[in-house]
Length: 330
Image (cartoon, rainbow, N blue to C red):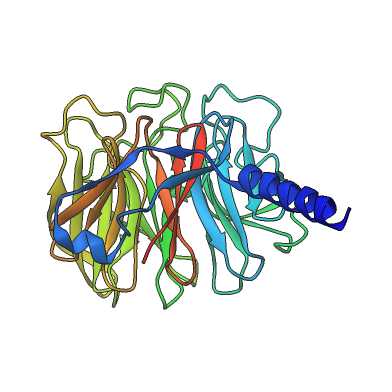
């Protein structure tokens, strides 16, 4: 009898183990041997959540061991944890009104400020905002950080990053507008800008020369800034030197102009402490070293929008259209 009980318990444990396994997506394309020091040869991109309209803006919150991410069309921020899976975290997330003509009214990029408050790039509200509630008790109440430049409303802030001094750098393409392009009658600014909001509240335009500024991230040391351009005619990642928080010496870090037929464009990106760049682009996630050498790709069949790193940089999270993925790094 004891033997049968032991066998039954073992069988149930096996079932639980099998059930806990995630489906996988895509494959790793190894272009440079250096990739073996970043991603193990046996690594797989696991599907940890799915069923969304367009997932974006992933943010790993170390203190709460949770991943937050936006579903932009549904105006919702979701939370994922190992213990409970996916839960609604915040709704509405980017548009606080009752009706929007926008196809993507919700929040996009998510980040934390120095005080641990949730900062949201809000499409529908057309602003950078702070959630006026603690992380462990979220409420859709928002404080405007900035919403205009020289008296004209932003189009739809998309992605953002803080520097150590507490200044906020963000991009403003037109994707949250009803027509999602420069011809939209609701677009008030004649360009798509990259901005800096100082910790004292002053807003300044850093560049208006990138046609569709999107993902944005600092290189280690914060002396250089990479900005993705999600323009199919100019699918480039640009790199700038920073002098007194001003962008100078802009040039192409890498171009995906020759990549044909793959879903996606240069979009969100993150850079780890060693200068390894994980960037969503045509066909999946492109991985570069700090010298702009392409090391490899996480090839995916659906468009990838953004990535997030865990605090120990051993996990890469990917927002992949209707899915969210996780892949273990070395």
